[in-house]
Structures are given as structure tokens and as C-alpha cells.
Amino acid sequence: MKVEEFWIINWDGLPLFKYSPTRSLRIELIGGFLSAIQSFAKTVIEDERGQYLNTLTIGDHSYNFLTDEVYKLYFILKTSKKVKEKIINLYLQRFQDMFIEEFRKDLVAFDGDITPFESFDKQFVKTYDRLASLDTIKSAVTNEAILSKYKDRVLSNEYSPKQAVIQPIKFLKTMNTKDKIKFFTRILPKAASSILNVRTSFKTLQNNPDTPDKIASEEFIKELEEYAYSLGIGKFGYTKLTPNLVYKDSTILYPNIIVLMLEMDKDIIQTCPSFEAFKMIMNTYKLLNKAANKLADFLREHNFGAQAGPALGGVGNYVVLARNAGLGWTGSHGLLISPEYGPRQRLAILATSIENLPINNDEVNPHSWINDFCNKCGECIRECPGNAIYDDPIIKHTGYTHIDNSKCFPQFYNHYGCTVCIKKCFFSDEEYDYLKQKFFEKK
Ligand code: SF4
Ligand code: SF4
Image (cartoon, rainbow, N blue to C red; front, side):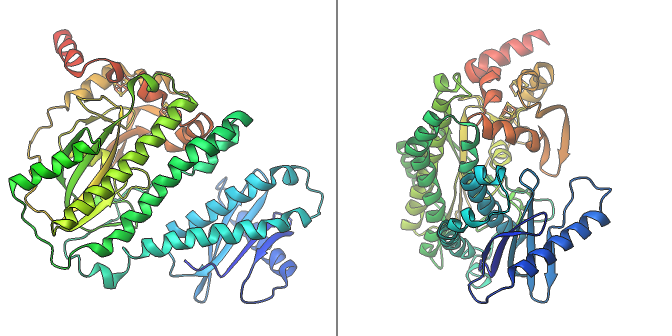
């Protein structure tokens, strides 16, 4: 995405920062103008508390607003109106995080002097370049010319879920200095490796064969599974994809799905919320993202088409795909509960041209009894520190969920990824068969 112009303006219309590579601007005029538009919008929709103008389209351009209520700022980004909202929001969010993180103290003590913010220039350009390069690679899978060779690709539809984007920098907010240092030395390298693997998953799509094979022998599937085990994958399953399981504005290139599961350490989960647990989770993401790319390469080497769907920065609803693959059932905490690891796993997928995968065809999922178990249990609902898990399910097109992300995310960011719901779940440390037997005995 090309950022044509970018401003940070306070609610009084005072510009704190501007980026405009192609023209010199009377920034104070624009600041006043954009701030006035926001005030107007607020007045018009004042009965809808917390609502602000998000987008203003003028000609071929759109002005996109992100409002910071804490520091009373508008982050405004001008770009082509063709750019997707999801991409614009990703940029705006990243710029906001960087700015607030860097200038928190100056903002609290702000007296009208904008000189401290001048140093944001270099940081802005660096972040912009980084985002733009990831963006270019991502656009490879939304480029129609490239997509046309994937006849069976599955596009998101009106019922598709929105991807919840995790921003590592937000974890810093409530960490003490010691943990901040550990974050930069121990967590960030793992997060960076995961992000690089997301890039690889898009970049390597160009290596897909033009006319991939569609039928694999039983021996080849066995070989693929052996290779997956050797990369640390604990279990996998096979299913077909439907559009409502593809994240909004995403595309998955093949409808044939291999779901990959990687276990999270049982003992370390019991320490959460903790730095140690957070580090272990990030490491699980890293290993899983790497394994998904290696397996995609393996498929391509054998003339099959492949797309790796990473664990962090994913492309679809992996929990429902795993459930459809017969790997387990969704617990009240919204996570997959499997016989092998309970809720202690992370998921990734591989989409492939192989049409004869040993797809799960069970009409009744053998793990669906977990639904009744959860209805009687409710431990995660009681123990959730954010009160983010509801007793009554919220019905969605992919099924249902008990989780309110807007309540979960603050806990998640402020307490090392939280994870209390996994720790408290009975399936985390009791055997699946034992719980099942006890449950049916009591019935
Ligand atoms: S991660 Fe924490 S806040 Fe979020 S649902 Fe689980 S227990 Fe609740
Ligand atoms: S804690 Fe209880 S209610 Fe929550 S997911 Fe686990 S079994 Fe289900």
C-alpha cells in the first residue's frame, strides 16, 4: 500500500507530525480542517457513544482516521480509495503504537511544543518501509493475474470472520523494566522469526507448479506424515475448506486442507500468566510456522501445489477446520480440545492441490460430547480474569463462540498473553479418556 500522506493531529487541530513525500502542505490549515470534520461527525452521531468518523473519500483518495481517546489524537492516513480497509487499519494501528510508545511522556506533559515529535520521522519511514515490503508480498495472493491460475481457490464471503491481529509491541505496556529487556532479547526474536515465516509463506507461492498433480499415493501421504512428525508436529487431520472459514479479505488457494497441531508444554502452561509461558507460546508459534513452510516446500518438490497457513498471522478459522478434521471439539474457551493435548496446542494449516487426502467423513464428531461436559463445567467462565467468556454462546455463521475478544484482549496484552483459560481447563492436565469415562458414569 502506498501511503500518500500521513498526519497526527490533536483534537484541537494542532498538527504534531506530518508525512507528505510529494507536496508541501499548509499543515496548520489541513490540521484545522480535518479536526473540524471530526468534530462535525461527532456532533452528527453524538447519540452513538464512542463512534468517530473512520473514512472520508474525496475523488480517488480516501482519508482514514484512527482516534486515540487517551491522548486525544487523530491519526490520519491518505491513500488510494482502492486499498482495503483491513490493510489501512493495520498501518494506522502500527503507526499509533509506535508513536504512543515513543512519546508517551511528552504527550502527558504536552504544553503546545511539538519539537519532541520531529524525531518520529526516521522511525515512521522505517516502519512504513517494513510494512510496505510485507504488503507487497501479501498482494501477490490478492493479485487477480496471479490468482487466475488457482481455479479452485476459496475466497472469503460475507460470513467470514475477521482476523484478530496480534501486535507484539502492545505486550510492553504493563511490563516492568526487567521483563521489557527480556522481551527484546527473548520474545522479539521469536516473534520476528514467526513474521519472517509469514512472509515466506506468501513469497514461496511463486514456486507452486503451474500444473500441479492432484492425486497422491498412499505411500506419499505416509511420507508426508513422517516428515511432519520429524519436524515436531504432534498430530494432523484432513478436511475440506468452505468460504466462511477463510478470514475476511483473504484467499486460500486450494480447498484441500491439512491441519497441523503442535503441543504446548504442560508444566509451563501451569505457570501462566507468566513471562515463561509467554515465551513458550511464542516459541510454539515459531516452530509451527517454520514446519508449515517446510511441509509446503516438500509438497512443491513433489509437484503438488501448496500454501502454508501460518499459526501466527493465519488465513482462516483453524479451530473449526481442526474440529471438522475430527481432531477434537471446541471448548467454552473457544479453543480446540483434543484427546492428545486437551486445549494445549497451537494450530496451522497447509492448503494443497491434493484432492484425495484421507478426509474425515464422520457424520458425527466423536468428540462432540465435550459440548455437554463444558455446559456442566464452566470453570474457564468463572476463572477468566477478564470476564470475557460468556455462559450463553454468541451464535456465528461458523457455529458459536463464548468469547468476547474486546474483553479478552486487554487481559491478553497486559498479562503476558493471559492463557488462564487453558491452564484452568480440566482437559489441560487430566486424561481425555478418564474425563470421558467419569462424565458418562455420572450421566
Ligand atoms: S485469555 Fe484470559 S482473558 Fe482471554 S478468555 Fe482466556 S482467560 Fe479470559
Ligand atoms: S474449563 Fe470446563 S467449560 Fe471451560 S473449556 Fe475446559 S472443560 Fe469446557
